[in-house]
Length: 157
Image (cartoon, rainbow, N blue to C red; front, side):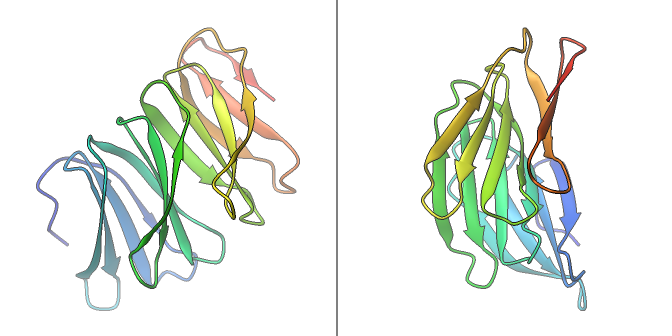
């Protein structure tokens, strides 16, 4: 599957395996139909490279993170942007949905993890304490805890 004009930073399958989302330095996320191996959507709006894309557990949304300091939500059926989550002060390295899809956790070079309400786009918490940039964040299977990993060789809950 070809179409990006920049390096690809991540690729992930939808929960049902019917789509792949790929994030790229070309400032886009592309959706690919796995049954035919063809592109079926280009998600645009970033002003800098896209670090990562992830699907919600029901496959209806994609969350993506960028060097432009934003996190964006996309409707997979329409390809339309349905939220821009702003608040990080540096490159956003990752973003992930909670198991129930109601929250997104985003990690950043600004040494924080931020939690966002997916229905409103509002920031619900800032988790700080890392002394170096944060690589990633992940929810526990029950969605009650967030773990984050940083360049400072620490994992925080």
